[in-house]
Image 1: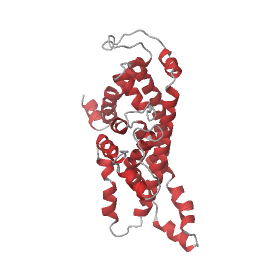
Image 2: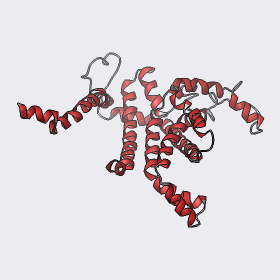
Image 3: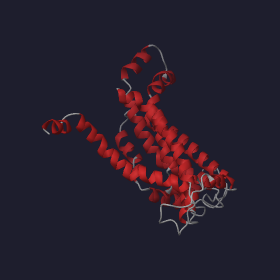
Image 4: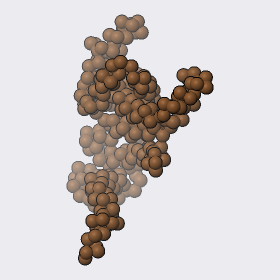
Length: 300
């Protein structure tokens, strides 16, 4: 007994306990709902059978019916456009800000703090603010575009099918800039200053130093930021609920919002679960990229 207790307190048993406790917690709160969701996508589910686990098994019928629906492919295309445009916009602006703040100009710390406001604000609050900004009648964005001469009349960002998705993309880019800036700033701070000094002594200009030192040294950080950005963007729900509600006519609808709409508005829980399973696949791919990007950093 003394040997077993010693193993638990200070040995392999203790290591196993450290892993087993959080693993059990994750399986209970994440693994079980995930498995339940996958099973639901393979079953026939309605309001009357929602409370039971054993429901008629239909195989991949929900998947085939989902992809046969007319609105499926446009919504998936909207999802791809939303994710790609958001990631590109967040990364480019966030990287630019990280490079700017790395120069440590006077007041940089205070200004950097202002950019963190979007990160700490709840998504629904951000959505409500951008709903006002994107208003076609009195929105700030239309005012700025008119005063700068870029447009002549108002753009109804939330109700015009040609601009509704773009409006949510703009709001999501603003929401994710600070996240990208913080993580990329950490990556920039890890690059030794001696490398830049040696390159400058060798006659390398700013662009050459950026291309030959900054980007190669930031490769793992960039991969991690993009992978995490894809995961978070695929989970983005609040902005659509607060700004466009997926409309008009599904012009700004995306997979994550459609899954909720099918489940809790149309009560088609099986189709909602099917969309969620499809999204899980893409999230797992992004998670794999993230793990690959940070693998050598973990090994030290």
